[in-house]
Image (cartoon, rainbow, N blue to C red; front, side):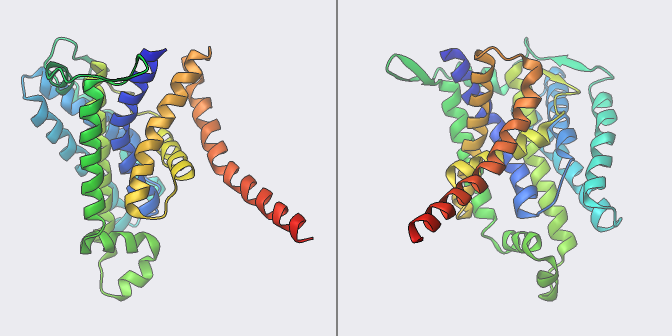
Length: 305
């Protein structure tokens, strides 16, 4: 059981990078970007292929990030310059990436990394002591490194969203007509936002591929749902009153989501039920706040009456 918890926390931290990317499009840009499913697998495919070819895993991960940014840029160009509906643009790029990923992986659906030097094997070699409490290991040395890395990315996003360009991107999502009236180019801000989001998603895919020891062409299927579930869970449980708070909330939401999945599997549910559990969690996270608000209103009405 302890191993399942530790593994869930490690995975939750690595997936949190993807969740931050989904947050940028879903909440900041107010853009339904389905490119995520393709760019997540793209990151894994690029990183795995380059690592197998002998490239340094850190450099391979950076190139995977660039690949994700290019994918997001294409989605942005389709919806801004091509005037294609944002949802459809994301679907088109996502479908295209499936074939592109197969090409990158040498027409193989799976690339093993078990005998290769990866970023995960490098973190293991650092031998950082685990954090234990009550005889239970809560954070492994690897998880501590993941946590520092995710917090660094979180703080960089916080900083970026408070720059002039970041504020323009936030304003584009809030009210694109208003920001255009002030002379801002909303096409540019949309493209940059999508590029940044999918760069983060691809980095997460690269890390996950190295963590699990293989890249698979279908590893990105359902990632947008997982990302949205984590964002919503984080906002409901930890609040969303400021940018710094909500980015921390979605990181924690990713970890909570993975822990819930781990507990569900321990309770006897099958791995094939994970999509159903994800859907249930999203529905619960969306409905529960409304039920609580109604209960509070009824309580105030009874007291007032």
